[in-house]
Structures are given as structure tokens and as C-alpha cells.
Amino acid sequence: MNNLPPADPGSQGRIAGMLQWLGSHELPVLLAFCTILASLWGFAELAEEVIEGDTHEFDQALLLSMRNPADLSDPIGPGWVEEIGRDITALGGNAVLTLLTLAVVGYLLLDGKRRMALVLVVATLGALGVSTLLKNTIDRERPDLVPHHTQVYTASFPSGHSMLSASTYLTMGALLARVQRRKRMKAYILLVAIIATLLVGLSRIYLGVHWPTDVLAGWTAGAAWAIGCWLLARWLQRRHEVEDEDSA
Image (tube, rainbow, N blue to C red; front, side, top):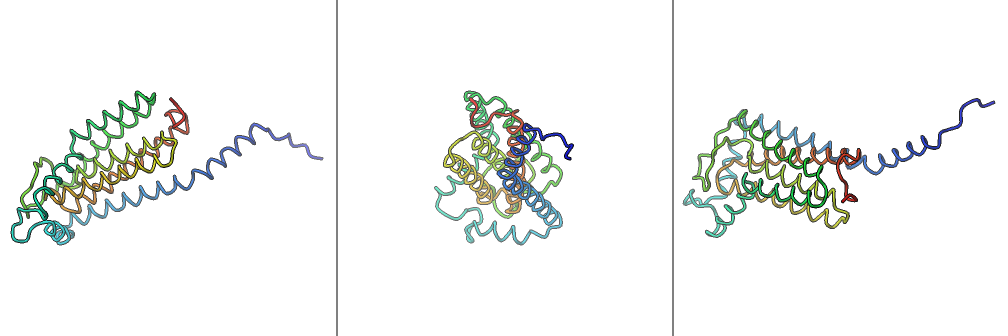
């Protein structure tokens, strides 16, 4: 004779709902964690190689490949390309990133997503703090092979423009995509964020203010930070502590 109490329909419903959520969300979360771990491992490897001086030949060859061999003060391409390089590199500067962050925060506030706006502010300020800490800790000298075509004030590794553009643009892209319903809009926002991040990093090498490994390290660290912020926003949305795409 079965003396077990009857199953609670409410408990069964909650378990079924949890299993359904895990089935639909486990793979993206797992991929995100793997990407973060791979990015952090890549950054650590780059930092070790840079400190030991093993990347110098690679850095020098790639940096010089973007210069006129007859005149190392002249980046390859016509003058208007150099001007475009300076314009693009400004997209990773503190002034532009601050204005853009404020603009996106304003958009989120007007759209009724106050907690998501707070997450963005904390993520952006946190990335700036981490970038400054890494620069001061490793304290790598800037390239001295070619004249710089823009002012520099800080250490070289990692590239602050590359890291902050990656962390800011990718975080903004991920958070804005989280509050969009249409998949095409999500893909478009993320694509724009990725392209902007890549262009800023390449412009730093083109202008001669960073070694290529500085930029690679900035990209890896910034990407890890952005994905971490995306996971945080996802978790907070799951707990209903941050607005999702259906809130207004």
C-alpha cells in the first residue's frame, strides 16, 4: 500500500518551469562563461609574454607594417586616411565614451529602465577602474619606433582605448540587446558595437601609440568584462531586479 503523500502540483510546476528555463538558457550561459575564461587566460598569457619581452619582434613587425618604409613618421595611405584614424581613435577616448554612456543612460531612463541604467553606469566605471589598475601595475612603455600622431599620457599595456571601447560598446550593446524584442535589432546593435571596438583598437596601432599586443590585451580584457556584465544583467532580470524587454 502506498503511503506516500500526493505530489504537490505547485511544486511540480515550479520544477518543470526550472527545467525548461535551464534547457533554453544553459548553452548561452555556458558559452559566456567559457568565453570569459578564455579571454582571461589569453590576457594572462599576453601579459606574461609582454613582461618577459617575448612579443617585441611581433609588435615591431606589425607596427612598422603600417608605416611608410621611407619615412616612419608617415602612416601608410593618403592623408585623409590618417585623419580618419584620428577620428576613429577618439571614439575610444574618455570624453566620447562618457558622453555616449550618458546618452544611453538617458535613453534607458526615458524608457523606464532605471535599474538597467544603473547597471550600465556601474559597468562603465568599473571598467575604467580595472583598466587604470592594470596599466599602473604592468607599466609598459609606449612604442618609440615611430612618432605618435596623438597625445598619450598613460602606460601602454593594456590599451585603455581598446579595453574601454570593448567594455563600454560591448556592454552597451549587450544591455540594449537585452531590452529589445526583435532579433534583427539585437543582432544589429551587437554588430555595431563589435565593429566600433575593432576599429578603435586598430586605429591605436595605426597612429603608433600602442603596440599590437596592447590592443589584443585590451580587447580580451574588455570582452571578458562586457560578457560578465551581460551575465549579471541576465541574472538580475531572472530575479526581476532589472527590467526586461517587456517592461516599460
